[in-house]
Image (cartoon, rainbow, N blue to C red; front, side, top):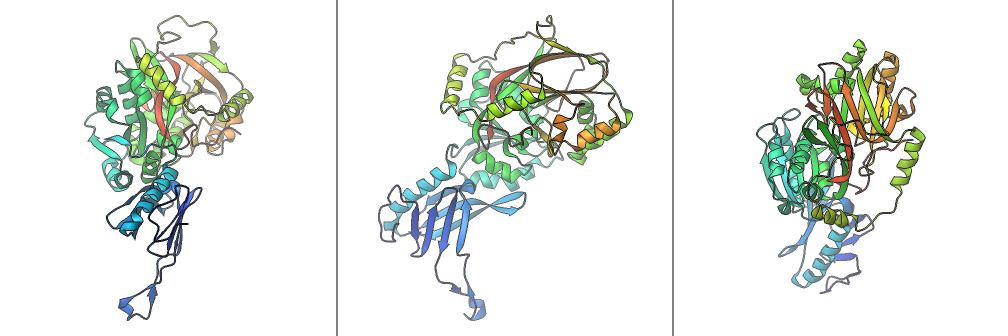
Length: 491
């Protein structure tokens, strides 16, 4: 333990004493502050009442944003829980004498090493604010809840407001990828969709997608990327998670239609889910509740959406899917996997070729043809959580090279459909017999009708045949764990 007179700090000593009687100890997961300074007289009460700061104070290392030794003080900034769903930036500071500075500076480095661990400090962030998404409050949410967190963490921030639909595509396509560590979207899932596709349009698409991490501050209706990566719908908690976020490879899905090719990061839907998503755009003021409303309205009509479906099935039974999830989740971590991925991306910078061709080619051999005459819901997921309390694809993994494909017949009873919807938060719907689930590397869907909705990451595409193919680890996001989604896996 160091004393106030120490001029140097043992690099293995995790305790620092400041202001004679304040002990700061770095533990395994928290900073413990013991303040034994005498209470100061409260002059408003003629010195009869004493006021004293909290003596025992533990701060989670995850919540530590920054620390520094200034001319005369040790200053520690952290994210303090303000409410159940928010944190606010708070600082503590203690006087430091000139001879204590060297020891304090060494201790600060220890604190920051523990606080950030594998996470990059001082991330360079390109922040895109969509003023039109969700309820139209993204700009104010960013300034109030995210900006102070980024500032306290000494992130380098470049903020730009998008001005029209597709603007983020142009920004990402022309971005200096060497100038930023992450692209942060203040929006719903629409802006990340544009960002991934903008990066995918570049001549160095694979390199750009591998090098530039994408993150979301939840300012829209669904906010699926935030729920999966950080497990929250809070802007301030998501900002903290971005500061502490770890680079994580993400499977991306190529969507081909006639002569077009786009990228999907979240989901592809046809049937009742697509109708609920895209058919309720006029109800954005309702927030996430518009999806539930749309589902119930369409369920009462018991509509079917006939189509032709073919799937490149990799795992076709639920028990096999559970075993795959368990095996992948417990696989050993490769310490240099990210650097190897970047090297490959630099060597082959363009988008990967389509292994199965496009939707206009002959159907590849070995694909399973699924009856779609009475299709009620076709839903393919690359992530687990589609919106708050909607862990629709609990067996998905960020980079296993597979997507989960759900099919539900449109002739199931209304009662069964409602039961399935109600069981999504608990995860019990996964094993319900009317829910068909496959892990796939590709699929093709051809609608029979002339009009309707197809949703890719919540965005509408032409109502015509399309084909989807997974590219393992093509994209990059920031997550809390660096390996998994913040979602409960299959039971």
